[in-house]
Length: 91
Image (cartoon, rainbow, N blue to C red; front, top):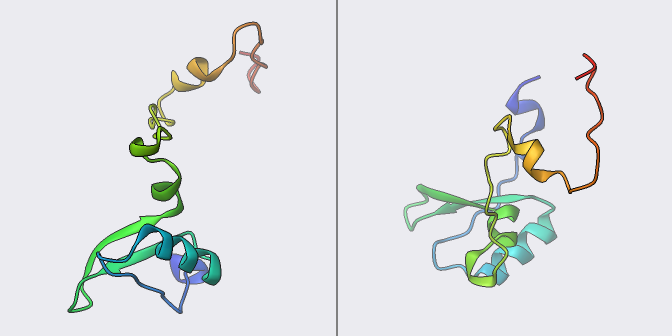
């Protein structure tokens, strides 16, 4: 499978001056999870995603631990008193 098999072909873009509220409404309306941000010459200058809107330091919802690929990360996520299930190797 390739990116072209799953990509959105009708791209909806926003400009740097687009409000966060308008960007969120566009994502909902067009059922996409991200929008390219383009300048006046239609050049890509960034991307805004659902995650960008959900996790904001200004609102106290920032993700403090974004390194979910770190092998030690899972251990830090466990709640005290819960036992971790063994993986396929019995560990």
